[in-house]
Length: 337
Image 1: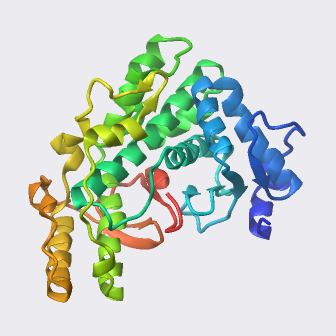
Image 2: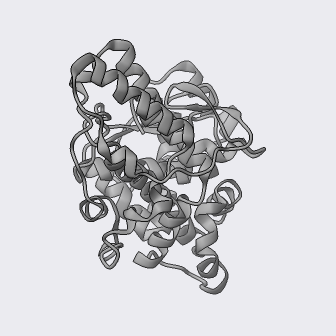
C-alpha cells in the first residue's frame, strides 16, 4: 500500500484529474485509485506514442514487475528492485520527468529478465565496470529513444525534459530530432545514445562511488572479503549480447568488443586507490591475491571540483556542476537500480 505522502503528490490537488482508463500494458499496479489512474496515464502515453517504449514496458510486465509510487527525499526519481520485482517512481516529479524514468527503470527490469543481476563483489573489477555501466547506458539510451519516438508523435514534453537534463544522451540523437519528422527506434540510435552516456565523467564517477567504493567499504567493515571473490570474468561480447538489445537483435552485433574502449573502462584516481586498499586488506585477512584486472584499467584525470551527490543510499563528494537535476537517473536506493 502506498504512503500518505505518495498519495498527496498524485492527488487531484497537485496533478489534476486523470482519465479512468485501462492500462495498455498489463502491469500490476499498487496504490490508491488516483495513483493507479496516474500510473496508467504514464504507461499509456508511452504505449500509444512509442513502439519501442511499448516493447520495453511489455517485457517488464511480462517479467512480473509491479509498478508503484514511492515518495523519497527528493533525490531518487525512480528505481527498479530486482529482488522485489518492483518499479518505483517518486510522485513528487512531473509526469514529463517520470515518463523517461519509467522507460529507464522498465529497461532495467528487462535486463534482469534477460539474466543481468546486481550481485556486486563476485566479478572482477573490470567486469563489474563493463557490466554495470552498460546496464545504465542501455537503460538511458532506451529512455532517450522512447521519448524521441513520442516527440515525433506529438508528445514533446518528455523529450524536452530529458534533453535539458541529459544532453550527453540526447545530443547524439540530434540529427534524428531535427531531420526526421517521425523518428523510429533503430540500432544506430540506441548505440549512439549508449556511447554518449560514457562522455559524462560525473555520471561515471558517481557510479564508481556507488558500486565499487561503497561496496568495498561495506565489505571491509563487515569483514566479508572471503565472500566477495571479485574473480568472475565477463567479456564485452557476452555483456552487450545480453544487455544491448535493439529492434533487430543486439545493437552492437558489429562491435562486440565496444566495452573494451578505454573511455568505457577508465576509473578515477580515488577509485583506483580504494581498490588497491581493498585488495591489500583482503590479502592480509584471507591470503587471496589481488584482482589483476585493476592494473589494466585506464585512469582518467582527477576531477577539479566536488559537490555532494546522493547515490544508492549514501552521499558522496564527486565532480559537480550547477545542473544537479541532471543526476536524477543515478539516484537510486541500495535495493534497486
